[in-house]
Length: 222
Image (cartoon, rainbow, N blue to C red):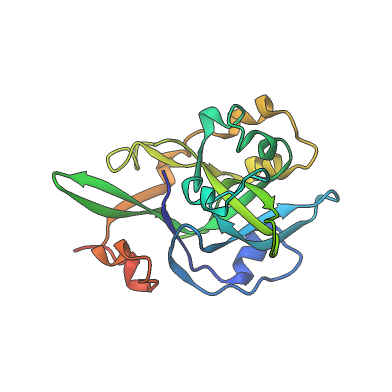
């Protein structure tokens, strides 16, 4: 699964890497947690990419209570097309969730050791995401998202058996294409990212508390 991640890359770099026409205003985040707003990129019918903020934890349009989103921070790639909460979004509401690292917890006896997973060169990357729009009985419309997960690659596997789907440049274009509505044609994208460019290392327990949104969360344990 993916339960925490980081996104501290500047808006200028994000705009350049992901082909945005405008530079977004982004505050550095080091310990992003479920129910918080996350930076996501969507494509309109004219294939223009735009960054917006979505609540992390997908709330289906048919939900009676927003609390259901707390259980839908991740969506398993293997069952996306079957699950009522995700199958409509898979056809027409796909997005990228932007990150530059994510945390996983390794079970070590009675305790869990957090690890940071990232690209060795520190560059930002895109998780495959789905989004939904939910209208409560009263109040404002809520736009929310989930991160798609798959089996772990060789870097992540010693820590956890699942990881987020990370898309390469070609995969990003295909995932965001508004015309791509065939779920079967998207399945080949939802696989573990090649391990060669990635690294994972233990970090301190500071990250265990989502209130600790500080750069020290990413410090490698000596």
